[in-house]
Image (cartoon, rainbow, N blue to C red; front, side, top):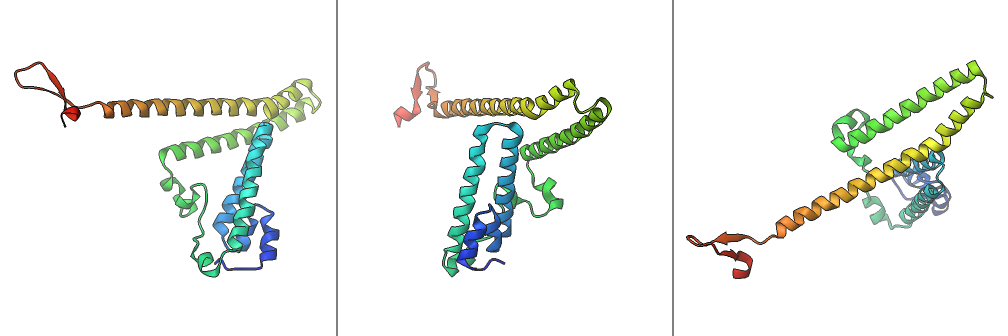
Length: 203
C-alpha cells in the first residue's frame, strides 16, 4: 500500500525510472515505467538507430517528475491516487487472463513479439554452433553476424514505420469517405414529378 515517505529518498529513487514510484508504494506504476524504459533502450540498442534514443530519455524525465510530483502531494490527494499499470497493462488482471483480456490486434502484437524473441533465440543458438564448427574468425560468419546485428534491425524497423504510416493514411481516407457520405443532403422526389429537393434547404 502506498504511503508518504521521505522526500529526500523519494528524490534519490526517482533517479531510476520506476524506482521512485515503487518506493512510494505504487508498484504497478513503477514496474510499468521501468519495463518501458528498459524496452526503449533495448530497441534503440538493437536497431542501432541513434534517433530512437530520445524516447528512453523522455521516459526518464517523465518518471523522474512523476515520482517527485507524487511525493509532493498532500496526504488526502496522495492516498486518493489509484495504483495502476501504464500502457494499457491495467487491463490484465493476472498472467492467466492475458489471452482473454487482449483484443484481436493486441493478440497479434503479442504473438509477433513472441515470434521475434523465439527467432532471436534460435538464431543465437544456431550461430554459436556454426562458430564452433567453422571458427569465430570466419569471414562469412562475421559478415552474417554484423548484418543480423546492425543492418537487419534497421531494415525491419524501417518497414514497420512505413507500414504503420500506410495504415494511418488508409484509415484517414476511409474516415474522410464516411464523412463525405454522412454530409450528403437527403434528397426526395415529388410524387409524379422528376424534380429533386434538398430537404436541408427546405428546412
